[in-house]
Length: 193
DNA sequence: GGAACGATTGAT
DNA sequence: TCAATCGTTCCT
Image (cartoon, rainbow, N blue to C red):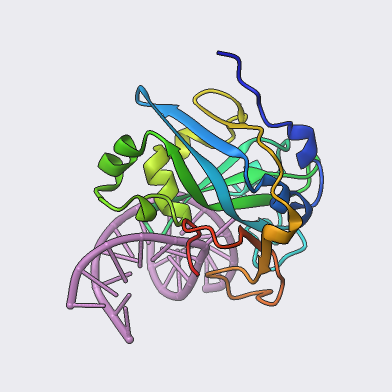
């Protein structure tokens, strides 16, 4: 079956411009022999000029993928137990990325349920660390090009602007006023209502 | 070498 | 409201 990969040339821009464009696209992983998929419903932008961004103080060992080519993954480990998955944006050398905060499960829900140890479909992928667990995303996918297995993004119809909500980002202490969180209005799988 | 903390989650 | 839990960053 031919895959219709998401066009990563759309990601050669500032993170907050790319972010809403990623809504509605399909995230797919085929790890440990199990394929799961979901529609991206919530994202947050992190720019190099943004004090809330890992890349704000320049390149380090952890954040170096953010300075890499657009369209690759930036996966980081946090709170001693969770992974978060980002899609790198901007030109090579520019440190920015879009955090994927939630997806709506569309394939492999039984697999995600086992991985998450949960029963409610609504709670499988409604958070950045939750979806990483459901999709089996970890450091092995760090810097992975998202136009190839085992983790990739496929194209899908754009979400109308009237259905995209702009809001403040969650869990940050700096630059809180920026409306760089985007989610699909009335979608049941967004992390917080 | 050491301390402080985090783009979270789930239980209390 | 709070504990879990450890890699990364930054300071000494």
